Image (cartoon, rainbow, N blue to C red; front, top):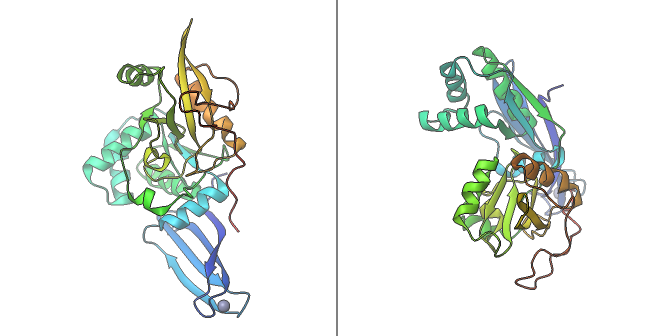
Length: 288
Ligand SMILES: [Zn+2]
């Protein structure tokens, strides 16, 4: 079952009385699945004021997208079979976004190798667009939680270098070759595509994630064992994302994809070097 509409509710400020209003937001497909649209309306239980903010196409605002990802978790799109005709898929990706040829090619490579990730309705949209061009793809959803960034906005605005994606044993070996891996814990996130992204110690998680929601975030340390590299310690310590213990399966899956043995759960203290206590934390509060 592929979701072609999703909704959730957010808190908002009433424009009429300044009280707390409820903003209902969503994404949906229209035009036979060929158009991705979003909607938002708010209602104030205090004064009864109702506002219709938007309903139709246009790119979905970031806060709406993040609310949907947080409420429903991410979805992924994978090709149903190896690609026969890359041109047809490229055309579908370009038509859907108005993306540059370069960007469409990046999306295509991502789709071919690892799949695309986003909200369920976004993935359903791509599925329709690709099917139109004769390219079969499948949507997977309901496999984990997403955590939006909840830290200071200025840290997100500051940007910074995104983390290095590490999706295969080869990518890990290449990354490990460029850093003093045994020295200290690293900042990590698990992106919505399920990939581990690694950044130098004390990097902001939000920069590591490129500002996007994540499936997991914390600190991680590696060590060399008899069989090669393994995870020595891993935490869910991220004040930017506050992922809870439910994020562990996504972290484990990202590590297993690379073939890295891990402790089987979050460890208490990652950081013997700085003495910071990386205690497992309570987690992010839901919407509303
Ligand atoms: Zn009001």
